[in-house]
Image 1 (cartoon, rainbow, N blue to C red):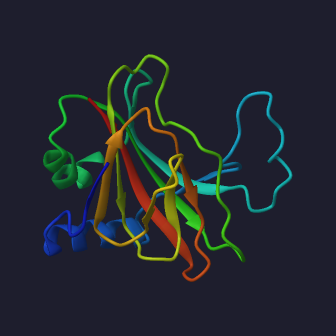
Image 2 (cartoon, rainbow, N blue to C red):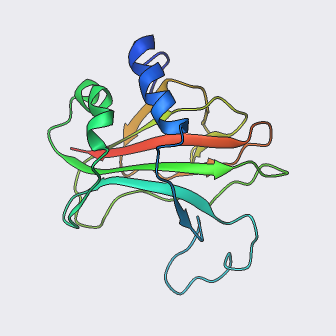
Length: 169
């Protein structure tokens, strides 16, 4: 795992930050965060929701007209092939809620990397199965093997926790 603070230069990050938190960023309601087919444990949890924007998903024909806004990030991670780019906006919760450990990959993806760019600074974090944690700090990038299980943890100190998740070869 690699953690890089100040991943983008300040002007590049400021532009992406302004776009991601601005009123022209289309966020779509997702009625669950933790859910697998046939697993209904979280359906009635009032805090189990988020807002997402799927910028790109290979094989599904998903390509947002806004993907070009992320070009400085995509260039810097130096990927051969994008598999998925998805942003999450998690509203503040009254207590920290750790979601289930998961991997982002589709079963057809082989060896790939996952990178998370944190847009907002808050007291939420990403936790890994080995117990390590990466705090949500603006312009921090964490890069890890795409088959490592990880879980997001909500924030309690800011209105939102916003990040962009990249899966790529």
